[in-house]
Structures are given as structure tokens and as C-alpha cells.
Length: 47
Image (tube, rainbow, N blue to C red; front, side, top):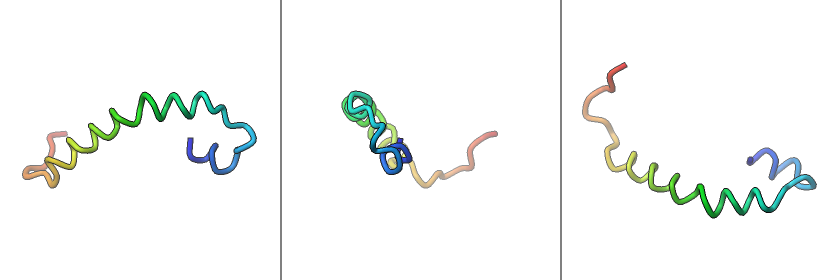
């Protein structure tokens, strides 16, 4: 989306931008906060 906003501003669908801002930012913040709460990992993750 960043590339479209920066380089394709004449083709931006404001409804899509608003939908992302209204519906996807809050869940992203919650996931990032949870990840930061346990960082750094005390043990390496299992692969």
C-alpha cells in the first residue's frame, strides 16, 4: 500500500485506505504490542 500511496497517488481508492485504517490498524497494533512484550526471546524458537 505504501508504494501505491507514494507513487500512484492519482489512483488511490480512499475507501480502501479508510477501510485499512478503520479495520486493520488496531489488530496490527495489538499483535505488535504482544510481540514486544515477550521480546527478546529467552529461548530460540523451535523450527
